[in-house]
Length: 176
Image 1 (tube, rainbow, N blue to C red):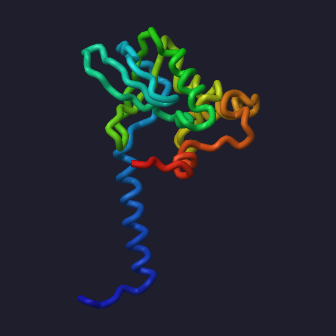
Image 2 (image 1 turned 180 degrees about the horizontal axis):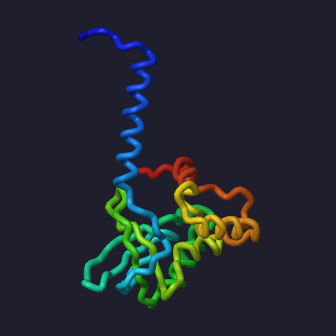
Image 3 (image 1 turned 90 degrees about the vertical axis):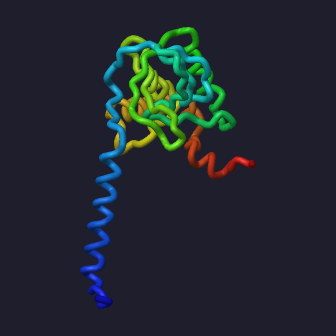
């Protein structure tokens, strides 16, 4: 049984294995319906940066929430403090509704914040305080909001070629 598979057969088996991995991983990911308002009110206790908050649920539990579908500048990055302030202005002293969509690798709740029918995640993108996180899976209205903010030079788009947070983190690694 130690015979070697021919190269084309070996490549086909590898490709099939990769496809199985991709589709099984996608099945485990949360669905990104960012347009459905939820039913319960939460109180925001801390705004950490432009896309992460700590909130108190109606049942009293505290959750760290990563805003789904967006990526705001890091706090020490250019426009980071402004992005945090923009989110804080929206949620301070106002109950919000949270649509939860699973958890991320840091066990933060992935969520969309709502005030009435306003999707705050989308508003942050439209106002130039965040990027769309993943262009390939984002709703069309998020992509349109980002393009409009970019064309109007709003927020982070006032700077030519702003640096995405992932690139900024690579250039500025944390020191222990």
